[in-house]
Picture 1 (tube, rainbow, N blue to C red):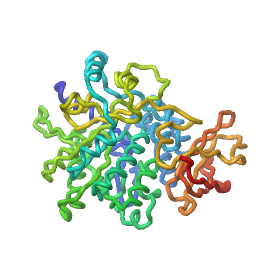
Picture 2: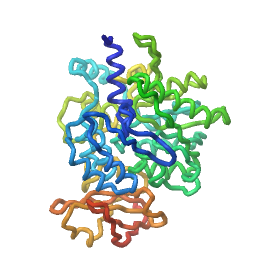
Picture 3: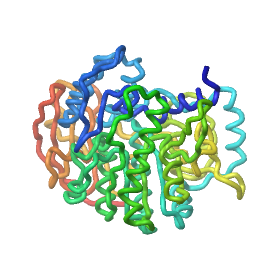
Picture 4: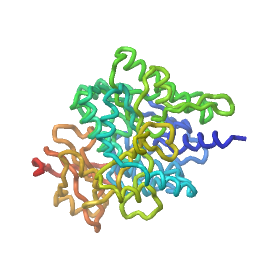
Amino acid sequence: MKSDREKQTLNQMQIHGVSRFFRLVVGTLLLHGHGVVVLAQIPPNMPDTRPAYDAMREGKYLQALSHLETHDPNHEMVKQELATIRSFVGDFEGALAAFGNHDSIEPDKIAELASQLQSAVPLPALDTIVEAAKDQQIVILNEAHHVPRHRAFALELVMRMRELGFDYFAAETFAPLTDGLQQRGYPDLSTGFYSNEPVFGELIRTTLQLGYRPIAYEMLSMPPTDADQVDQVIHRETEQCNNLCDRIFKEDPQAKVFIFVGYSHATEDTRTLDDGREMAWMAARLKKATGIDPLTIDQTMPADFIDTEQRINPWQARLAKSNIEGPVVFRQDEGPFLVQGMYAGKVDLQVIHPPTKSEHGRPSWLLSLPDRRLVDIPEVVLRTKERVLVQAFVESEPDTAIPADQVILIPGLEPPKLALRTGSYRIIVQSENGTSTQHGQVKVGPSDH
C-alpha cells in the first residue's frame, strides 16, 4: 500500500510531469532522429490517435484536430491531446476547456492560500526574475504544454536574459539535431513537437535572432518495458540531466543557460520513497551533477483562466487588488518569494498571470508581445462554407516552417483576426481533409505605438 507521500508523487507525475502529448508513461512513442516515431503497439483501453500524430508530422493541423474530435473528450489522454492541438490552431479558450482545471488546490486550503496572498507584496514578474538572475548560471522556467501564454512570457524573458549574457537556450521540445535549426534561423516541422505551435515558433525565432545556441536534451532511449511510473520518470530525468551536462557544461563550465521545461522538470526537491528509490526531477539532478544552484520558476499554478470564468481562485481575487499590469510574483515582506500549491518548497519563484481577456477572438497576452497587431483575414477567405484553418507564413519561409500565426474560421461565427508582426506573409487555408491552398499575401506595416 502506497503512503500519502508516494501517492502525491504519483499524482504529480500523472498531472504535471508525464502528461505530454506523446505519452511516455504508456510507452507508445519514441523520440528518434528529427521527429517522433509512433510504435505500432497501442496499450489496452487507450484510444488510437496515431492518425492525428501522422497528420501533425505533415503539418496538417486541422486534420489532426478533426481526428481527435472523433474520440471520447472525457478520456484523460484525449483531453490532454485535444487541449494541445487546440492551442496549436489558436483556440486558446478551447484548449483550457479541454484540459480542465488542474490547479491541485484542495478546497480546504483555499482560505489559507488567500490569507498568505493578502499579506504578500506583488512585484512585476519580468523585472524581478531578471534581477534575481543577474548572478545565476542556470535559469529554468516551466510551462503547461497546452498554454501558449507561457511561451509568450518566456519570449519576453529570453530577450531580457540575453542582456545578462545568457547564450544557450535548451528546450524540451527540440529533436536531437539542432544544427539545421540554427543554420536556417526558423523552426519547422522537424524541430520538435510542441514547437509546432506558433507562439513557440516565435519564441524559437527570437532566440535564434538574439544569438542563443539551441540545445536539445530530451531522452533518446525508452525505459525498460517492465518499468513502473517512478522508474520511467527516473530514467527520463537522469538522461535529460546527462544530456545537458554532456552538451553544455562539459565543454563550457561557465555557460549561462536558459532551460525551458514542462511542469515538474523545474523542481529542485529530492525525496526518498518508501521503497528506497530516490525521486528527483531534472532540475534537482542537474543541480547535483553540476554543483550549480539554478534559479527555478513555475508559471503553471494556477492554471490559466479567462476573465469570464467563475470559480474560486485566490490568485484572481488578489490580482484584482494589485495595481501592477501583467504577470507578478509575490514576496512575503523582505523574506522569501511566495510559492503555493504543489510547487511550494520546490522552486524559487512562482509567476502569476492575470486573467486572459479577448479582443476579436484573440487573447490579450498575445497582443502584448512586441510589434504585434491585429490583421484582418482576406475577404476571399471569409467566403468559405466550411471550417478551415487560416495560416500566415513568413514570406521568406517555406510551408514546412511553423506559421507565424493561425486561427480557425467557422462559417456563421464572427471571424477572428490574425496577430502578426511587421512583415510580409503568405496566407494558406487548410481544410479538414488536409489539403492546402494559397490565398494571396498580406503586408503588415510598422506599429503606430
